[in-house]
Image (cartoon, rainbow, N blue to C red; front, side, top):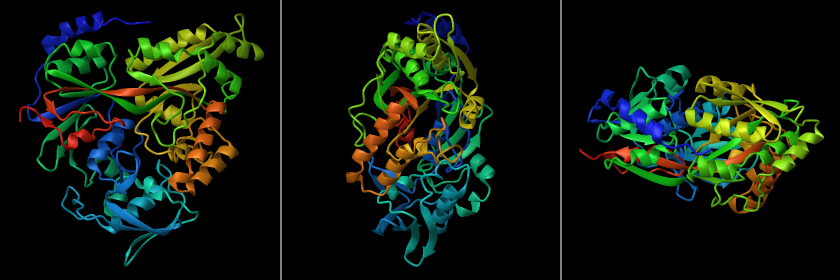
Length: 491
């Protein structure tokens, strides 16, 4: 299973002559995919969300312990059904010089709650009324929610610009650390840091070898993740390239269409889970740069369930489950599996295909460019797929992903899971303060683990390669916020 780095070394050597140095005053960050939308409320892909975090300051921030702290607004609450928001002191203006107002906050929350395409709609559905009064912006809730502030982690945009979502997505205007400059022909984007004008260009380079080449010869200053793991030791042979690594919150999983007559049967999902050797994949494909997991939340998260049992690698158990359904060597089970065209994800898919074949499951791998692939997943056009959740901070993710009211596009219940018991647990948890919700969220995790909505795979480390950049330190959620303070080493 292990792939040696020799072919990458050869490719790098052959192509070095074609590289040219980049603008020394622009920090080029090579990324695998283009941002799909720079609208602060409608973006759903990881690259868009990470770039948006540079452009838009959120209403509410999180501290290192994932507790909500004031961002654009601070809040007070007389009871858990009534909140009052006021602008926090020291808010920077928008990048066009105009001032952030409570009217902008009102328009932002209203759009995030009411737009059918908003991924925040389900989290904010409980807000019954949003209105400005003399003492601030009042939020009236249909049901008590003592942890509403954690749901307000979304960027604020001018009310006048929110009326045209397509225009805002293409020409963002926020009050974050960076301002938008322009789109590039490759689908990437140029930003400028507001405090000193340092430019950052996100260059879209789908091929991992080409991204590595750009770093080696100075066409790029930064790469984060999205490389075959055997390439990292090759690249760091160059003494001018630094590697920083940190445990990450990125959670990878296999998803199933529960409305499909085959993958809707839990026994099929359990057979898949027992057929997969996650430890071997982490050891040989990730070279140890990931950790096998059983739930979305990191093990040190305050709401994580510590006692979930592994779906251990057990091919005999997988074969027995398939036999119950009438499948065997003469009648294998055929499943389709969708993934992106990313070379590393295709390698993972090929290993999964081989592991499943050993128990009598023939996997048909269908790879598509990112937009088509993600569109199919949101529309439910799949039997199986693999994706990752990035930047998970709060157990409120369980409503967004598993509540039966969270179907796309307003939510991310992509497998169409429906469980009245899980719905009730989530709704009860939302009405309790943080200190009272841990048992409920652990029951949610136990139920979805039993139901096998996902086969949990691993949490992936964040690996950040830099060339001549000060302060390039990866964050657990994989964000690009280190660019707020980082700088080119030769400036």
